[in-house]
Image (cartoon, rainbow over all chains, first blue to last red; front, top):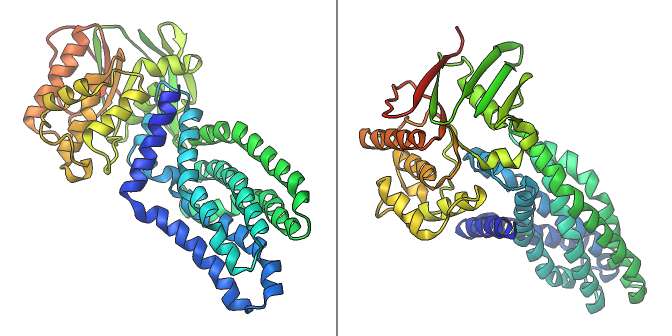
Length: 223
Length: 205
């Protein structure tokens, strides 16, 4: 069973490496959105510190959203998705492997680039650390929930817009507690625990249900 | 043994076929015929479980295919209108993934042999997007040689193939039928078999 997981994960990562632009687009989108705000609202330290956590998280949501559309679409077009549906393996396992690859390619780079974003907003070292931690736990939730939406809107004309209308409201809890953790760390570093506990529980719930829900949605989309 | 009883499929308001009954026994080939739009592809997709028929039942070895789920899919090989190969991956990589998904033999020796037999020796390490339409189809057809599935469902497997490849595919199908396999296919070409039974089903009449 793990062989299938590794096989699909390896496949998606290989494909992404042969088409690097898709991965870099997401990353640059994030960097640009984050950098635009200081230019727009001015460089006052107080304002930027207040805005920082929220802006970084909103940019992360949008960046993760950007690549979602391609999660199943490319495989749908060339018929490989059909073959995955007919495979002698549980579809949810294949879907989980695809989501993992998606996160490694779009979520993890955001976590790693977060210090750069944090510095633009004059966040302290501690706050940046909390932000990286929160993104590390939060971005997989975005990929998992997003996969359900990507599966549901597969093959629909104008699916991209529909996808954002469907998925962005579901991202709200992650946004609230993700940026909340960074916000609270500015006052009291030790008070971030509950925020992480909540984000982690979101992750567990999403990890349990999202692959099943996405595979059910894929079956409907392919009819 | 594949049995279909009282199958009915609709697309929108149009009934493609209804009260369809047939069965395919091991060592037999069923040739599904019919004009364009008569529901051949829909029938084949229903047999695979990719399309849910409006009524009727499909049974594999006496049990409902829907209930068998993965067990049924392990016994099944579907070749559809799309080749189901990735343009950015090489032929060998594509087949390795297909073999893992289908739980088939997937060691490199077998894959290289299959590609050589299908006439792609020398092209194994090229990304498949560099190949011609016919060659891409050959990569996809190499899956037939790796497969251990007894039931083959082939939708227009002969299109875009040159004469040599058509002959080879005929041989593969004949070998599979001779080895007690089951084949359901649609094609506008005649299929010759050296062993086993040949039945045909007309849709839309």
